[in-house]
Amino acid sequence: AKDLGRNRFQFYQPEMNESVGTRLNLERRLRRALRDNEFVLQYQPQIDIATGRIVGLEALVRWQDPEAGLVMPSEFIPIAEESGLIEAIGEWVLREACRQNQAWQDAGLPPARVSVNLSARQFHRADIRQIVLSVLEQTRLAPEYLEIELTESVIMTNAEEAAEMLNQLHDIGIHLTIDDFGTGYSSLSYLKRFPVDRLKIDRSFVSDIGVSHDDETIITAIITLAHALNLQVIAEGVETTSQLDFLVAHGCNEIQGYLYSQPVDHGLIPELLSSDGIF
Ligand code: C2E
Ligand code: CA
Ligand code: CA
Ligand code: CA
Image 1: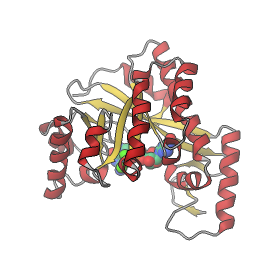
Image 2: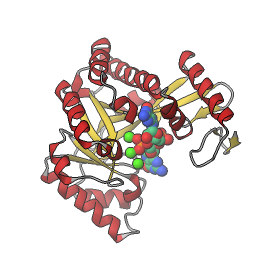
Image 3: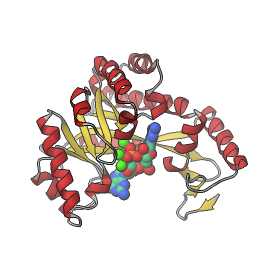
Image 4: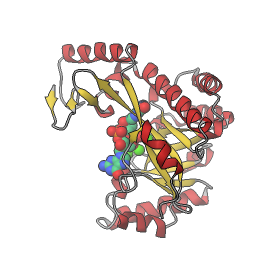
């Protein structure tokens, strides 16, 4: 393990050719983490540009390791994917995010969607629709307050099958967003056939606002395309007011990023939800 400073530990990097032993060890520890309930969620607000209010909260998983402290998803999701553990971890994330959102609503807070990231393995499970349905039933969360984020590359890897799965999920009444949009290959004809609600412009484009004219052009093209297809657009990784100004000027619907808030512990969300708009 390599100390990256702060209280974070780097256990695994895909490009680092780690020994089988190290990976098996991480896998064993992840299994234990699941059993001992060591995963936690942080939530990052998503802001509606028109009203300045929080309309969504993206649930982001962390591992509170007793020895190493807070471990970020980039350090364990790849191994969880490879080993298949992501299915159990992802189901815990889904259930916890829905439970927490319903608890906030029960406490009388203004309702917001909760967004959950679905991995490729979860998405391709034959029973994913049934899992989502039973979690909604168990947690009493109305489907309109759950959003599932799927990356463009996961969806486009097998677009025919994805269209079928997306239809099954859409029928439940939840929201669907294509995450990291613009980084992969999208067939425009499929985009029209996918029952999705929102495209999330990848941070790599947003961070180049004011830097790369080409990336600015891509952003405006994505927004125009999305609106022409009746889709909403959210931009991730918004860190500066000049990025915000550009996105507002070009009709982006929602923003998410450090400019407004980093992902925060659940305890901080009630105050954020009940505060007035930010613009
Ligand atoms: P993502 O879904 O693209 O999530 C956005 C990431 O960008 C998060 O990193 C978030 O903390 C970070 N971020 C948000 N705003 C800003 C900003 O303004 N500037 C910068 N530089 N970064 C920002 P995080 O939490 O480390 O998550 C990384 C990735 O791990 C996520 O990327 C997602 O792919 C994956 N992940 C996180 N939670 C889950 C989960 O529950 N299930 C699955 N399958 N994947 C997850
Ligand atoms: Ca996401
Ligand atoms: Ca993303
Ligand atoms: Ca991204």
